[in-house]
Amino acid sequence: MCKQYNKKQLSIMFSTLFVGMLSTSSVSAEIAVIVNAANSSALDKNAIEKIFMGKMKKFPNGQVALPMNAAKSMNSRKEFNKAVIGRSSSQVNAYWSKLVFTGKGSMPKELSSDAEIISTISSNQGAIGYIDSGSVTGAVKVIAKF
Amino acid sequence: MKYFKRTLSTLLVSSTLISGYVCADVKISGFGSIVAGRTLDDVTLDNVGYDWSQPPSAANPPSITREQILTADFYDVGQYNNDFSFRPETVFALQIVADMGENLKVTGQLVAKGVDDFSPEFDWYYLTYQATDELTLMAGRRNIPMYYFSEFSEVGYAYPWMRPPSNLYWWQVTQFNGVHAMYDFSLGDFSNTISFFYGNEYSNDNKEMKYYDELYGGTARSVNEFWTDIMGMNWNLSGDFFDVRFVYFQNDRDREVIAQDGSIGDYTPFSQKFLGFGGTVDLAMFTFLFDWNLVTYDDANGTEFPTYLISAVYNMDELHPFISYSKADHKREKRTNTEDYEEHYMLSYGIRYDFHPSASFKIQYDKFVDEAVPESGWRYHGDSDTVTIGVDFIF
Image (spheres, each protein chain N blue to C red):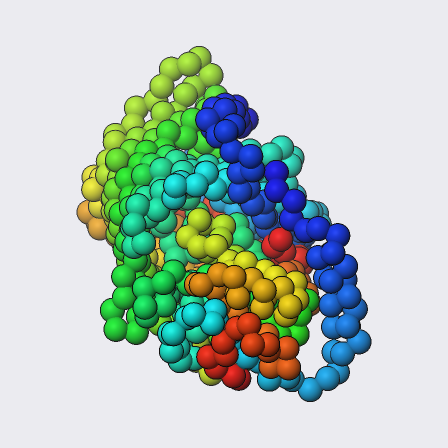
C-alpha cells in the first residue's frame, strides 16, 4: 500500500490546522488560481469551475487538466468554493460524494499547503490549483484572482 | 456473504495479476450514516391481520390497532416502530478503488447495515475501463440507475434529507450484475452523459418479497425474484445551476414463491417499463429537487405505478431546512376499478446542519399517509408519524 503522508507533510498539516484555527476570524483573503508556467490556456471563471467540478477534463489546448484542492482545513478551499463554485465546501463535498461513490468521478487531489500546491503545479504541466494571493511565487503562473 | 467469497477470489486473482507492481494505487474512502428514530403513535385502519371472511367496509371498518410502522428502507425491510432504534438505517461503507494502470480500475464497496446486524457485504464491485477520454465502460455489480437518487441512495451525505423518500424507493430489486457504457459530451455550455446498461438480477431469498408474503399470512419458505434482460439508458444533462436526468429501461419479471414443502407457486411472468425524469435546480438561496416516474407492466391488469417527488431546500451557510412531498399510486388500467389500489404520500420536513466539512447532522419528521381504501386490501402500510435524527459522513 502507498503511504499517504510522510512526517513532514503531517507536521505541515497540523501547523496549517493550528494556524487556521487561530485565524478563523480573519477577513477573506484574495485567492489566486495558478497553473504551470508553460500552460498558455486562458480560462474564465466558468471554465475554472467546470474543471474543479469534473465537468471539463481538458484545457482548451488539449492538455488533460489535473485540478488540485487545498486541504479541507485550509481557508483557501472555503474561499475558492464560495467565490468560484458558488457553494459552501460542504455542498461541494456532497456533490462529489455522489460521483465518487457511484464511480463516476474522482475528487480533485488534496494538497496540504500553498507551498506544496506550488511545487506540484510547477512540476506538472496539466496541474491547476489555487492559493492565497500572498503565497504566489515566480514558479507558477496566475490566471485569475478572486 | 456469497458475494464476499466471490469478490474475495476476484481480488485474490487480481492481486496475483498485479503482483509485478511495486505499489498499486489503492484508494480507500467511505461513507456512512448513524441514524436513529421511532414512530410516535399507534395506528388502526390497516389491512394487516384482518379477518377477510368479513371483508372491511364502511360498516365494518378494520379495528386492529398496532404500533405505527414506517418502512424507511424497503429493499432491506428497515422499519421504524415505537421503539427508538438505530437499526433500520444505520450504514457504514468502505470503498476500495485499485487503479491498475492502463486505464483499468477495480472498485469494491463493502457495506455494513444495521438491518443486516452489521455483517459486511460487498454490495458493489465492478471494473472500470476508460476506453477514450469520452467513453467509460463498466462491468460488474452496481445499483440499477432507476430513480434520480437510486445510484447513491445510501450515501446520506449526498442529499439534504435523511433518505430519498422511501415510499417511492420501494422496489424489491435495486442492484444488478451487468455492463454499462457511458459517453460524455458537451452541448454548448452544458455537460452531458449518456449511458446504456444491460444486466440481470436473480435475487434469491428476496427479503422484501418474503416480508410481504408473511404480512399477508403466507408461509413461504422463501421468495425468489428475477429481473432479467434489464436494458435501458440514462441521459444526464447539467449546467451551471441545474442537473437533470432522463431514464428509460425495461426488463422481464418472474418470481418463485417456494412453499415449505419445496413446491413452487404459479406465477405469470411479465415485462415492465420504467420511465423517469428528475433532477436538481439551484435558484438563488433555494435548491429544488424533483423526480417523476412511471412504471408500467404488460400484465393482464394493465398495472401502472405513477410516482413523483418535489422538494425545496433553503440554503443558509451551514443550515439547510427542507420540505418534501412524495406521492405513489398504483393503477390497473385494464380493470373496471382502475384506481382503488395502493396509494400513499409522504410529507417530510427537517433540517440539515453541516457542522463539519465532511459530516452533517440531520433531523427529520415524516408524515406517511396511507390513502388506500380498506376494502382494497392494499392498506398494508398504515399511517405513521416518524422522527429520525442522524449524522451522515464521508471520508
